[in-house]
Image 1 (tube, rainbow, N blue to C red):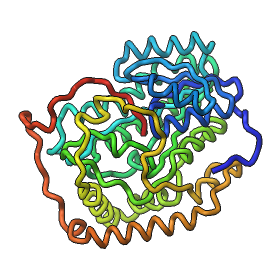
Image 2: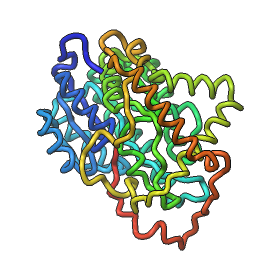
Image 3: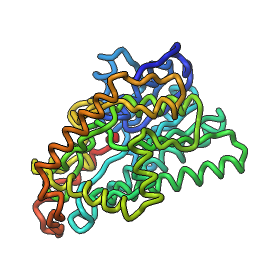
Image 4: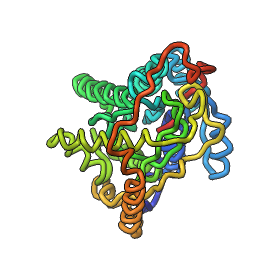
Length: 364
């Protein structure tokens, strides 16, 4: 996507962003910097972010913190406020996930997913809210289609995103009632081309098969910028995402069948998974893309305004991705017709050892 007018719409605005070590968060750091924002990035491992920003001509204050540690988050937010002179926008983007059915997943991995993706967001927003009230600022959050619909094999992540949406919609009403001027905006994308899938901790010892079609991380990053400039409560971003949201709302039996096929697609992956995965370890390098077939969205420009101009090749890319997915689905035919056998987790399972380094804070 490109911008059809001058940049600098956030010039001088003080922005705190989480989850900038990869994926959407990293792309968002560049997008906000490109609009002139003063940035503070909270990350478990700023060392992987700083060289990437420098290579792209962007500058930001980076603060090391694990968002699940409430006291440390409070200190980090105060440091950001002190360095920036206040806060105007908080972008909550940090997330991590465990892959596998419920009985395959180590309970600690399930709890850690919720702690990073939901509780971490609450910690950051709670600490930042008094400062946002002073500036009549905005909370911007990367939600997910999974905040509105289920997703088998990723139940911990879907649970955390549902909780995040409930928290933010409740917070929005509280701020309206208090007349604080604080706005809340959520962007709910579908599959995104990020390292999320490759980095995910796995309860099956295998990495998930990546989606055959996904939005480029820059599409979602630009959407976060747009709702920071003109806050809107919720946007289900992109035509594919809207279609699945409507299907789950109005044709639940059909959506359940579709999601069962998606579950089998993910579970047909056969490559070994990283151990311990991103729940407990940060990625070794910063990159927005995960190498998944990515594209722009045809609907997003209409949803976000004429500032966003879609790549004219997007229809061709969609057709190509669908054709590739069809060929792969034909090859996987038997695997997509039957459930993949579960491998229940147990406390002595070597799949979970060694980990628990608690070095995690990643991005969707």
